[in-house]
Amino acid sequence: MDSATVNNENRQQEKQVPLKRLVNALINVKLHEVVRKESFFINEVQGSLPLNADRSIVINVLDNLFQNVLSETGKSCIRISAKEYSNVMLIHIYDNHESEYGTENIVSERIRVEANKIGGFVGVTRRQKNQTVIAFSFPNLPAAA
Image (cartoon, rainbow, N blue to C red):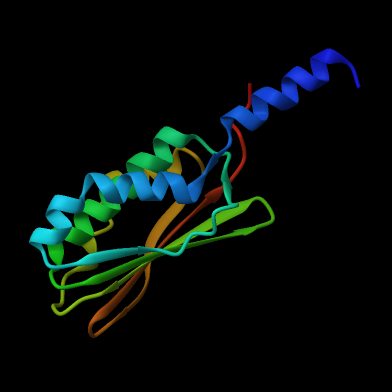
């Protein structure tokens, strides 16, 4: 293996960030509001899942989704899980809440447009009394150089 290939692989590994660490950081920023709302987050993302897609867009979408869920709910258990299917990352946000709220308040057009920048989709996949499930899926591929 030549040095150019090794350097390219090293740069690729530097770009990968564990999704779990990213979700933890986003949750930590919101701790004050989480406590005020008498809610809590559970991060169920596996520690080994790398984030290869555009980090800033994924952070922006997740941050807005977390904020919108917190704005609409109280006394809630908010769980985040993720799975990778081939090159597609699927993130679920489960909100077990005590009140009903409109899905348009959670998944705004702005969030959908932002997710679409990386070929992603955001939507509410299930809405039942006291539980809402939000899905965010996107190709987990590095941006073309």
